[in-house]
Image (cartoon, rainbow, N blue to C red):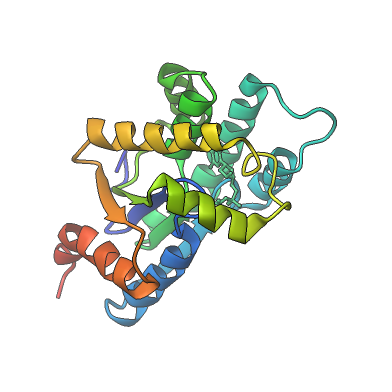
Length: 218
Ligand code: TYD
């Protein structure tokens, strides 16, 4: 990872809504602690620090008529800059494994791809805000569009937030953007099929991390 030499690792879980990231993040943390004896921090975006959580509220429950696409991207980047500087980098430097439910590839897929701002704009904001930091491994949890739509309806009903509540076409474009990002960087991403039971998906998550786990001192 950029500029950090400790044995800590930074893992990002990415994917559209209803792909099971939060459940899988918790299960992963539990196994990394109990089976591998690791010091683990689970966090999320937007959020993870007091400042970034305040920005999260502005983003997901926006005042007035909502944000322009550019303002939205800047707010996500600002929340991420605080999260990286105040939580992710310090914890990784201490040797912890940090698991984040979403990171910059969410901005690339939602704001850059589905939102139409393009990848260069999001990458430039990330370079300025967060030193262009990349995770040691990004796991893309995938479910097909029909399963995702069903899970979303069951989860949110009429109570979705400002971004979760966007059109099915927007969310299909997010999923497509994620697939393209992952295909363009096979070394940085691992695909995990999120369709099975939580335990089945968890087994695949551990397999996806096997290279990093094999590096651990025994
Ligand atoms: P959250 O409730 O955490 O979503 P989920 O449980 O579905 O993962 O809300 C985060 C929302 O913010 C989600 O709709 C995705 C969106 N988002 C972006 O649009 N860009 C970003 O950079 C990030 C981190 C999230």
